[in-house]
Amino acid sequence: MEFLLDPDVTFLNHGSYGACPEPVFARYQELQRELERNPVEFLARRFDELTAEARAALATFVGARAEDLVFVPNATAGLNAVIRSLRLEPGDEVLTTRHEYGAVTRTWEFAGAKLVYAEPEELAVAIGPRTRAVSVSQITSPTALVLPVEEICAAAREAGVLSIVDGAHVPGQLPLDLARLGADVYAGNCHKWLCAPKGSAFLWARPEHQGWIDPLVVSWGFDEGFVRRHVGRARATRPRRSPSARRSRRTAASTSSAAAGSPPPSTTACRPSGRRPRHRCGRPRWTRPIRRRCSGGSTTSTGSRS
Ligand SMILES: Cc1ncc(COP(=O)(O)O)c(C=O)c1O
Image 1: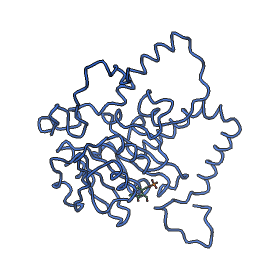
Image 2: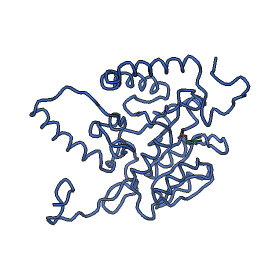
Image 3: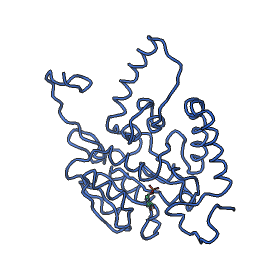
Image 4: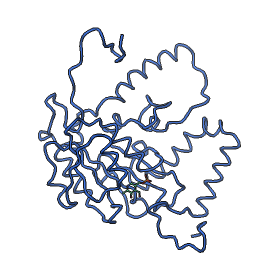
């Protein structure tokens, strides 16, 4: 396959930034030119259809449903969205290894996690009563190990703990079947070993976790489900709606954005019943506990101060 690489360079490091094959780059340039010929037509009218097609192709490749997968600029951005949406409480522990990527470890520290380290083969038994999430790479960055993520995710599920898998190096290196892997959340890069243009990555989440994962940028589509919520682009032109259609949309939006901002529901679909560790309020431990809200007159139903 032809690459655009400098012939004097022996390029082996697709793990930092993958080089893009010439035909892929040509198609990417073609699309960029098409965009520049008529930006509004491309971004406001064709974007959804084009990205839906790309998501469907990627979903097939990684063994997922297209609606459970969103494009993000890189794996770090996808994992940031997840980690920062968790809103950890003081003392919440995150079980991980010493083989993780520094940017992800820093994100956990930024989010206030108490990181607890275990050897990869001991992760499954190291889940403790304060563990809120298990965070591991499928292929580790500093040591190039392939971790047994299926087993780790199964143990996390059994304990009622969220499993977050960093698959930055996986697409293009290992076959991936997200439907079978057992993770709750998975982020992967296409611009490393899959040699896609830079800025191609994805975040995948089980349906029951999609509602609480906020995008890093809140924009149009925030109240329109997982895929649109994470697109974060300006929708320049849409046909104007009638006042009554706008009113009913506003009502629908306030209902669904309340759901979007809430912690994950307690589902029995993905957790073994009966043994799930729970907060005192009854919610599973990987969610935020329900706090008693002020019932006085200072807080309105939308949370704004009166
Ligand atoms: C394990 C792991 N996770 C995440 C990343 C971050 O990838 P990106 O820079 O595309 O966000 C890397 C980068 O090499 C990595 O090795």
